[in-house]
Length: 186
Image (cartoon, rainbow, N blue to C red; front, side, top):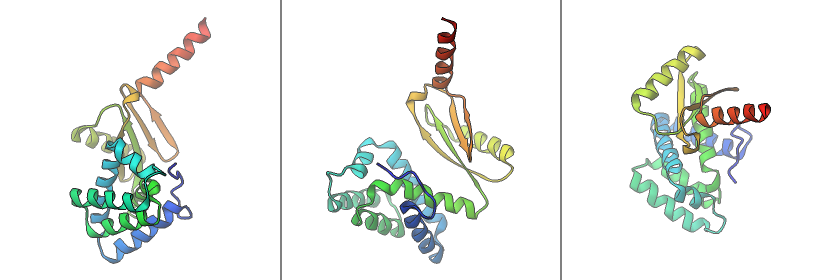
């Protein structure tokens, strides 16, 4: 199971901090962030890739080879390629998503940005993403970086989490509330 904590004391935080230091020294923070964002999107879009990362049956060497082929095919930069190889070699591939999140959160924090996690039933268009980002920027009062992902179980609407605040306008939640209200009437 992937580790949830992404603070500096967590495993994911330590790996992310090491990558951040290397990227900062190489003056490649933006390139590494772009590569990690692409990699996170690939992980989110592929159930097979998530199974590869989390499977205790698949050995480190096989995971390493599969991930090396994936990052090469995706055109991922050298620093992230080496990082992913090290993660696989150390048997920590299951924590890769948490490491990516920790890196991007640290980058956003250092740039004075707030990170918003957005879950939608269908992929957001560029225009929708821009409008949402601008709305959140006005609401929060500073720069916002949006981590968007898709969850078809929502049926429609959005779930937006900014810091400790959560805005849930999903149809799934509205149906659950209606169901609870109907039980109270019966």
